[in-house]
Structures are given as C-alpha cells and as structure tokens.
Amino acid sequence: MPQHPNSLPPGNAGPPFTVKPVYWNASESLLREIRTRVFVEEQGVPADLEWDGLDEHAYHVMAVAADGTPIGTGRLLQDGHIGRVAVLKEWRGRGVGRALLDTLLVIANKMGYEEVRLHAQTRVLDFYLRRGFRSQGREFMEAGIPHVLMTRTTTDQTSWPAAFVTRPLART
Ligand SMILES: CC(C)(COP(=O)(O)OP(=O)(O)OC[C@H]1O[C@@H](n2cnc3c(N)ncnc32)[C@H](O)[C@@H]1OP(=O)(O)O)[C@@H](O)C(=O)NCCC(=O)NCCS
Image (tube, rainbow, N blue to C red; front, side, top):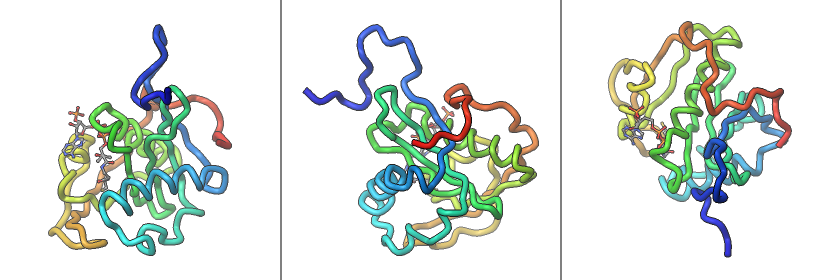
C-alpha cells in the first residue's frame, strides 16, 4: 500500500522533514512539481508568470520528508528578494514553511545581504510577521493576488534551523 507522505515508519525517531539548499539545474523537476501544484494548480497563477526566468540564478532550498518526498521550496534572488515559498497542502501547519524561510534568511545573511525583501500574499501576512518581517507601503496586485511588500534585516539570522541538513549543497 502506498505510504501517506505524513507517515513515518514505526519507531523512526528522526525528524519528520529536513531542509537543504539545492541547485536549480540538478533539482529543477522536483522544484517545478511543488510550485506547479501549489501556485499554478492550487492558486491559479498563470504558468508564464510562475516561470519568470529567474530560477537559474537564484539560491533554492527544498524541504524533504523522512521518506525522501520533496514537500516544500523557496528561493532567494540575487537582488535579495525572497519568493516562491511553497509547502504542499498536506504538509502545512507543521513548521515546514518556517524552516524554509529561516534557512533562506541564514543563506542571505551568510551571502552578505543585510536586508531581504519579499512580496507577501496578504492572506499569509501573519506567516511572515511571525518571522520578523515588517510590511511596507500599500497592498498591490501581482498575478491576480493581493500582495504587500515586506522587508527584514538578516543580521540576527546566523544559526541554521534544526531542520537544516549540514552538508554541502546537495545534487538531488
Ligand atoms: C504560507 C505557507 C508557506 C506556510 O507554510 P506552513 O508550513 O504551513 O507554515 P508553518 O507551519 O511553518 O507556520 C509557521 C508560522 O506561520 C503561521 N502560519 C502559517 N500559515 C499561515 C497562514 N496561512 N496565515 C497565517 N499564519 C500562518 C503558523 O501559525 C506558524 O506560527 P508560529 O510560528 O507562531 O507557530 C504555506 O501555507 C503555503 O505554501 N501556502 C501556499 C503558497 C503561498 O501562499 N506561499 C506564500 C507566497 S507569499
């Protein structure tokens, strides 16, 4: 019988998921699958807006369940813009989004970005407020969805979150 992605083998004491940095050219199909399911299919974002040509030169992170299933992703652009934070529906509310965001903040800090910014969907403003982001200016529309510009310094983001896998950039 296929295993539900949330379930762990009996007696498994390891973390339910981990987060790791990945190369776009090595993990493109896995990251595309997550973002297609979340943004294109669930939220109705047009595919040509989702695939904006910026992924090849961005830093990407991927959350992986204990059984190896990719369950979430996010990216940091070279201009310090965080985006495309997405967690598969069945995994939400379990700290995956927070771990992805915290990992991106530490990457930004270590890469020398003192401040990061993002366009937050107004619906999930609290998710970012809880991670120390502050909203700037007025709501605007992007991909047909209301957004707010948010910024945050990264100077306090020096420690990797517990879910982070401490090994060199993975090729899967
Ligand atoms: C937004 C999203 C990434 C959050 O991921 P998640 O794994 O469910 O979030 P977590 O479980 O890590 O929650 C972290 C915190 O944010 C809060 N939070 C999570 N989703 C929230 C939401 N939709 N609204 C308000 N608060 C939210 C949680 O209560 C939690 O608070 P805590 O730190 O006080 O415990 C996920 O819901 C998602 O992928 N949504 C669809 C794609 C999307 O909208 N992405 C954002 C684009 S700007």
